[in-house]
Image 1 (spheres, rainbow, N blue to C red):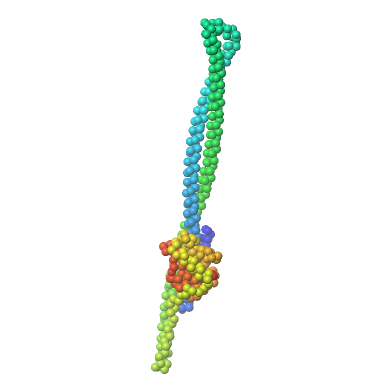
Image 2: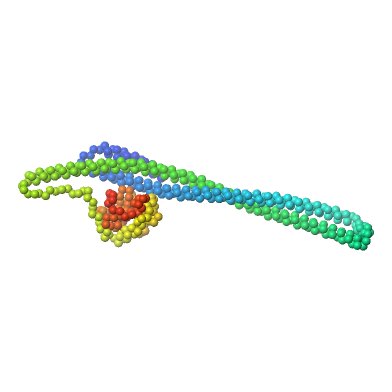
Length: 413
């Protein structure tokens, strides 16, 4: 695209030099002026076509920029959501780490109590085994009564049962806390893994966003270049239009001068002839008269169908670069889409559409023909009318075919 812009710059400079050189030519005859005017008109048409192509490409570029803007915004939103998720994971990890610390403390305490209970139990068991039966006998002999002896025996049994139950309880507590700690560690590992995945996704999105930012900046720069080139091309086109108007004035003045000379010569000839006869004074044809528009009848059935079909979309919007008959199209996008719906493949731009099919005179135009103007195209519907995507303010509408100068009429069907 940049190379194309450079070519347009060089071409535009050459055009400007050509215009300047042509301005220095002092054509003195109608033939010379008409030839010069045709050359200027051809160059103006080519320049207008280039402007239209650049405007179409710029419209497409603006659509790409809009899409990229939306994509960048969506990606930025996704990054923010990921950052929130990462923050939530970090909070959850902190909570789990706190629970792990509590579980670790509970585990240490349970283990400590288990060991203390175990040591106390060992001491009592060791004492009993070391004293043996003498200790038991002494306990019973020292009993004040049989009831007291039973109580002491029951106490020893309860003491043993207590030691056993407490040891079992501490062991169960230690195991439960150890299992809880393992579950918390597993949960923490899962959270850490999920956080790492989120951070990796965030990194990918950030890389994609950085790429889109660069691409968007490049597209905006290209769009700015298009605006500059279009403005320059329009200035050059204005120079051509000025030259063509000057030439038209000169041609009109020379023709008027020639007409007057012809009238004077005719009068002199009539005066020289046998005096009383009233010769018919010939007058020149009306070169500026409009061509009688063709009737709406005639033409191919497909052409009639295309014309009728195109009229269904009158009132829909004009959108630069668009090809939608309902949501919006520009002039060439409108003709392109209408013919496409009938199975005809025609070029996308108005400049290229001026070369398709077969050229016919406007006097022979039929419904379904494409009417070409400078930088604009329309579909002829008969009775001197066209349907076309006119401007952003008027949209798709029906107009008189000769509302501006017709450059050509192209028949595709």
